[in-house]
Length: 126
View 1 (cartoon, rainbow, N blue to C red):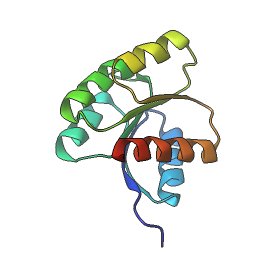
View 2: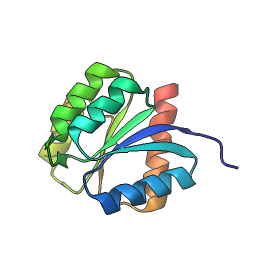
View 3: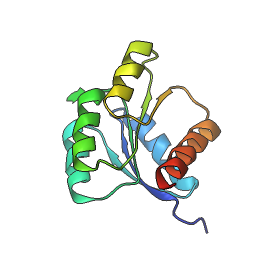
């Protein structure tokens, strides 16, 4: 039995990617909730405390930068990591200015994704 390493809200509008992320993280001991829109993510963040927000930069109903700012208002101490296919240094810088803890570019190996998430959570706790 794997102990719960933390509660993550994965915000991804591609259903296949969302399911893969959820399965990978759950297999590695995380509790994962999914949201496919900014609106759904904000509702979850209003109702539940999370240890990490993992979000895409482009969603069907908005942009990840704006969502990051809103999540920061709701849960200011919860780390926000972008996991996105947008490999643009300007977008990464903008995300970090908006309060993101990390900016991860897809594709990333499963092992690397889990390790980066674990590192973010360790830093957030200590």
